[in-house]
Length: 277
Image (cartoon, rainbow, N blue to C red; front, side, top):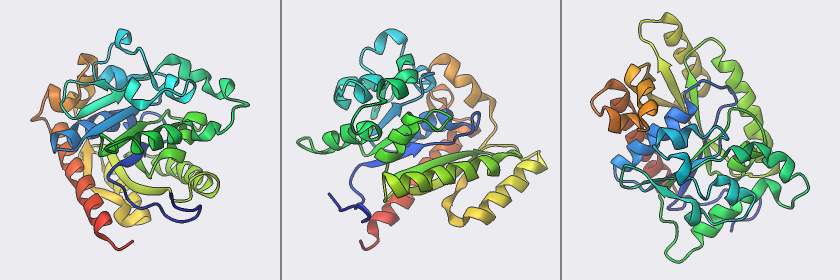
């Protein structure tokens, strides 16, 4: 393992924390549908549902009765990720489901050793198993707040992927998130970086969406993905059927946008890995 302060090499497994401290920005929707799209283009993907609400689990059709071993058991009970991963409708995509008990993790681990590194330890154990990780991407769906779960996600991640809604207060919420990333980088995970910013809920009929997109691109430059996720009713409908939108309606504009985003994520990652260490 690299010493503290040295950037970790980019391994076959890439762990991305899908994070935004502001709710309602399309975070879980992005985790579900980007994960599905990555699997559709040939990647092996695990979504790790760290939100006590469990919306990612529900949106991928994992019923409550199927959630026998969960993210709670990994973080509090020390269970292996392989014990909790559940297959989904799509080959190549699995999920570690959520549990409402995750809401009490902060108190339960108040005096625990390595409380901020529980998830990282589990992922490192998975990487170290014979044959290495069975996945090429892990997407961690974080709760919309800064708590021990989000800290665990960022301490475990190689990078943060930020869904950003095209609306007035978007940049304000993004500033708060960047402060959190800097704190985690300074204290827990010196190699943490921003993988990219995904503009979500873009409405071409709304001049505000266009202005927010321009402001974000001016501020973050090429960290902002070229792909923009539009407002699309099929994307909103899909979770109520327990399906990602690519399974619910492959041809809709939302599905096509997430497929394009997946190709962009993979393309950027290949460029990154090709760069000299």
